[in-house]
Image (cartoon, rainbow, N blue to C red; front, side, top):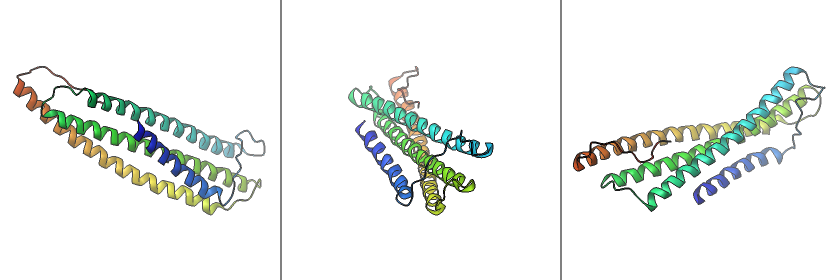
Length: 196
């Protein structure tokens, strides 16, 4: 739980850094999708960008909840481990891999939120300039979007690596479980809660 709060604070620092990157150079004022000075196309662009921020915020909350659930299961597993014999170590590795993956999911969702906010600022600035409402330097806004996209791509690669590691550990788990079932003569099927 403490690790997830630390990760969340690191992600929020990343968002703050990107916000500062744009805010230090200029303050982009928000526009309303109901502004009568704007044509319908501009209103739709603003509404779409605002919706993207709301969706990204929801995904951060979902990722945070998922991480907390997985961490709670991992703690419960550590406090009262089932009798798995040699398969116990592999089961612990699988839980650890799931926690790491959930942390990456949270970092990815938080970075995606930063990207959505950077794009929203860019949409506000572009729309303001296009319809002579205000003048902005778009270069730092574009830089913030590109930097966040680059970070998101790296996280996507990290997630793929973590998924392949989790798949490898899952295969090790099933091999260890089969050996445990054969050695104990158990024909039944028992699985500790490893599903996401």
